[in-house]
Image (cartoon, rainbow, N blue to C red; front, side, top):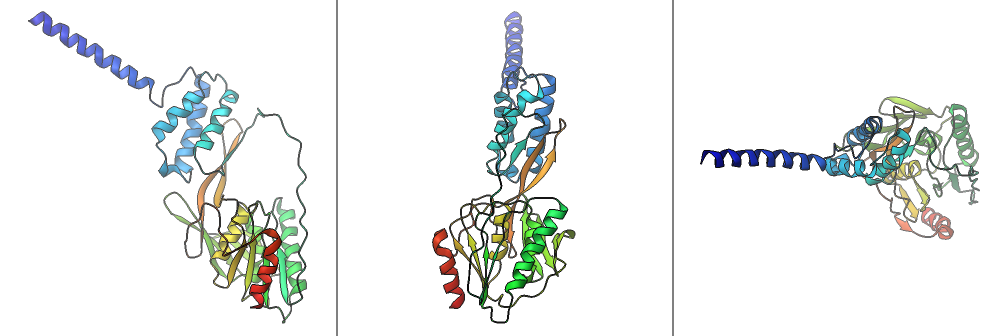
Length: 323
């Protein structure tokens, strides 16, 4: 009896060890023949995603980690983990985050020329201003602000019945010069928010030509004034209005005297931050969703108040202003 009992205990003990090992093979910590360098790099990436992603509270991180490590199996260098990093970012599901590697593992495509947009023509009693994408250094953004402000100034007159703000094809960039450039059409105070995964707000604030993130000054229009006729603002949007372009659409969603015309926006109304990695790569990560000044959350496409095609919206907007 004693011999049988000892044999049974030994069997159960060995079975427990085997079960533990089998469970370990399916955990997120399985190396899948990764080098120590590759595993350490993926751990760094996954920690960043788990602590900063706007969708972090919606993800089963054990399953996520297991999947990413399996995707990266047999990687022996940091560069060999890059496809798995891209895969992980795609799995976040925000459709906005992206990976900028230190070592190009994909052939560089030809640099595309940035588009130039023509302004629409409106009657003298309707102001029109196009807000294009904003990319560049401090001097370039200062020129951006001054150019738009000059166009508002040139049209401003006591007969103005309203303004058309054209956000069509604005694919994004730096939102703060955009906000400062149209300061003459805005009311001072809260313009919107970034809300993180726990709905903690960061304020978009405008005050007398200055655009702030909470209390941090990020852009300034030194020639701002109060424009005539801003009691009606028609905002034009389309499917190519994206990212910071969508932030401007959300800003006007909070204004009772504004209406959006056109088609649903691209659908990445989320705030991104750029995070450096140990090898010099960067992850531009969606860490928040946009909310208007009333804290209505977006995060997806911005829906127009009055739908219409690109060829229709200008006329629709002018009719609404006149009526």
